[in-house]
Image (tube, rainbow over all chains, first blue to last red):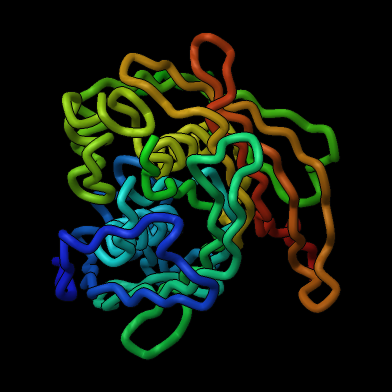
Length: 158
Length: 158
């Protein structure tokens, strides 16, 4: 279940439009036990993601979402909140899960641009460093993603 | 479609069983256009992941899998190839996608343990640094994941 903020499709951003410190806030995604188990059965079928009883005996002590599920939901929220013209294209980054996502959590992502580096070899683009924090409804951080995005410049006339 | 290597459920590893340099090789996962679009519709619905025609006009020039889909498939292959007793539990790591995963690719993950650090504050566990390279059938690397895993020690008698 995704609720998106007003998102002006006509207002797509290029590298030229970005500034360090610029912030983007996503809509929300409510996650439940069924979603957690469905994702995990396909991609991370460990007991603490698919079986509540077995999860009680695990390091987590209860059913929790796969970190990769939190990452995938974060990506969904980023595609709806970061209006880069060529899309949200990550070359890579670092990711941390300070605490797990739980059934019933409502997730939101806040992103801030931390670095903008025009490419020397490819003058039509640059790399943007973005920090995205995914929080639950208790304002606890469940994921921090520092990503390197490929962003095109506005096309210049020949 | 997942093909797994022989995996001895009885041979589960604890921190005490691990050594730097230890390697694990996964089975394979064959990815197709339907899987790519299904994942992307849910988590990364950008044109270059869901629409072949629109993808031709994108930075990628063709339909490609979401990097988070490659990450999720990698996790599936890791759960089947890295037999840690308490499960493959990542605290975080860094990830890079040097090239995209394409429809028709057959992915395999090779992992090597690079660092083993017993916890000072919690003597029952340690952190293991693992490098996992995900390759396609042309032996090209589509993802490099350096992860920090939480691994329990074998329980000692009281």
